[in-house]
Length: 209
Image 1: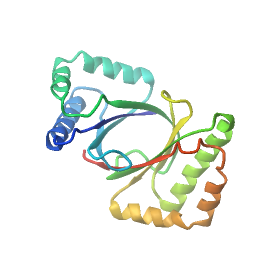
Image 2: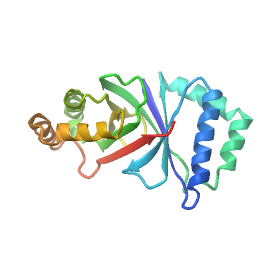
Image 3: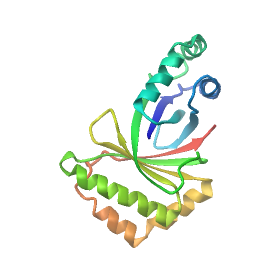
Image 4: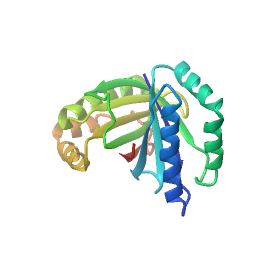
């Protein structure tokens, strides 16, 4: 399985119009394609006004088929063209393979936290094994459904850890569960040299629809 995401940042002064477009286009795409997309908004770790669409795909072929259907749909193209001045730049897409899941990741939750990083190519096998074990540990300590994914395209070695939370209180509970946990801290210490220094980023999204 794959997770596709599209990231856009609403231009200053256009937040109301940008959010309206984001919700309207999500509803339109979901009504006119075989895949349902979720819409979220950045809370931390992305520029203010960032919106993120995400959808699950069984294969690259399925994604390309869905894309072809939308690009042949005049209503979709008209809506996208009309929104040209609402955002600061072109969209940033990512297509990631779900390597491992811990817990029930079948449904979208109110909040999604993501840790993005780049593996050191010289230690890729170790880093992937460590990442799978870390996803299991985070799920065990917090109860949060957690996925480990690898980037299919883009800079080589990109990976992501994605966890969900039902509400804001669950975010605080999860953070408290790992903050001083000796197993978690030891696991983190054991990752030295596996990831490129400075490549990490932590993002929090809130689901809109």
